[in-house]
Image (cartoon, rainbow, N blue to C red; front, side):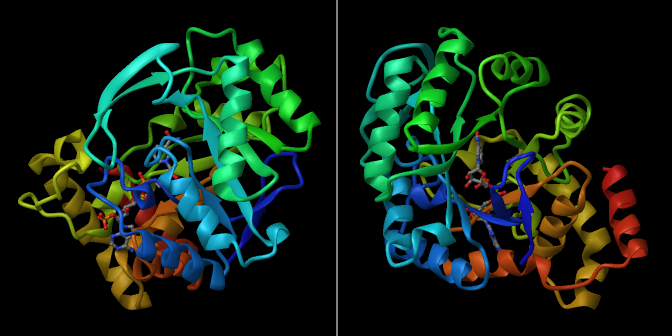
Length: 327
Ligand SMILES: NC(=O)c1ccc[n+]([C@@H]2O[C@H](COP(=O)([O-])OP(=O)(O)OC[C@H]3O[C@@H](n4cnc5c(N)ncnc54)[C@H](OP(=O)(O)O)[C@@H]3O)[C@@H](O)[C@H]2O)c1
């Protein structure tokens, strides 16, 4: 495993960081709690020391699973990344969407990052995670109803109190990052990036490079699509958001699979899986600090962690990159 520093901080994260969204079940059909705990522990054993979660992932379930998985590990050996600003238990802020929790109950989700709410969310996260500090605390989505300065004053207070080490954002564009930085220095931006979703290369990625901000690439496997296992007739479990996602419609699946077939000979020659090759390409791209790889079980998380265990020549990398450019 490799470890990289976040921007100008002294926080180092494993290049493959465990993404605990699917582990929380919500929007992914369901979760097998024991499998999820085992997925985190098995990945940790081979160097995945960093874990990204959020309160909204299973409405607390994902954070509890993370807490359970790391409880025997000395705290300083793991890096906990969590978020705030998506409320399902408070109808305030910018209404986002209606969903169902893991028990099938209707929930209304709001983007809200008012000061009191951020402070309360932090306390709840610390309790669920079983820790007294969060390494990286990230706003989950921009909240248009709260002044940005108010939100980041709250985070600054949490840093002052030692409950949070560094502040980050998710899903922010360059202008939003610049606005937040008027109040507090940011370590990172967590944004979507994969072989078939490279929108950030235009503006946000150059901004982050120029301003020494880390990029945490989310959905690097395009939610499973880039593993090569998805076919146009793939059946998702009820409640799995991918069934209606634009990247899981037959035409996009077929186009993506054609791309994967072109790079498969390199995977075969190296004895790696497509997922490993895809993750490796992702973390070798300029400006990408780490990849957040989601996994449901230990087989997946261990396979993903091993994306750093093989050599790629410049020629092979160029071939993969040129193929991706043709997509
Ligand atoms: N800040 C945000 O707004 C935001 C948004 C999205 C994600 N994220 C973060 O980024 C993380 C990763 O993104 P993601 O979970 O959306 O997508 P992802 O990492 O691209 O894909 C994860 C899914 O792909 C499948 N998979 C993973 N490894 C596999 C393997 N080796 N073989 C076969 N299938 C495999 C699993 O689902 P199946 O087995 O069910 O196919 C897994 O849940 C999240 O967990 C979360 O921490 C953040």
